[in-house]
Image (cartoon, rainbow, N blue to C red; front, side):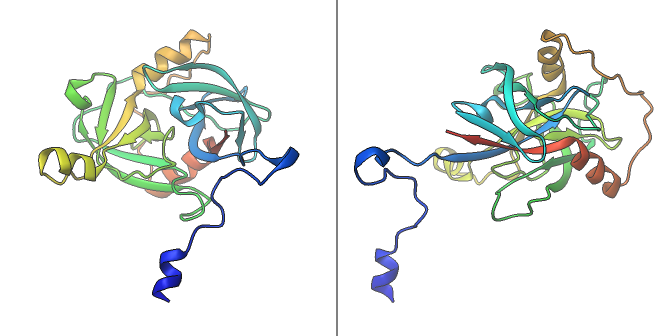
Length: 232
């Protein structure tokens, strides 16, 4: 059994097919999250989610095309074949240190729930690494596949776009310390600026929006979010 374990190789590894006309690499697939920002099928996600894609698909909304993307902010706007009857509202007021937040997304597809995951935490810092003002730090847990998903306040308004988490191994190797909950989102004002470059007029939710229960937040986020799949 030990010999078999040492010699075991995954059957689904992407590698060229033998010879002849079919001697080409199998397409690789990556997934992320996106959320609707208009009634016309515009979808916001991370640029790294759709980088180098030959085809982009969504769950239940057909294929997507890239409207605009920005490497510096790591954001992209897509347009899908079939829009959603729900779309997100970006909060106008800046986030507050310590306020409660919720992250929705489709992490670790094939391992975790295919219907989406909701996690909760707080705004840990109003800036990112090296005081980067384009980022927020949040304590809500995220995993691969959460990228591009919404970070919501207690009224269901978008504060940011999930973008990255810190590799514990890398930080431990560099500093000797074990990091905890170092997760980051693109600041909502940065997302708004990119959205406005394509002429979209965003909904401006009320400042005193009512607080939702976590169950209501999860349902709201699920209605305007979707799995984004990139084929390279």
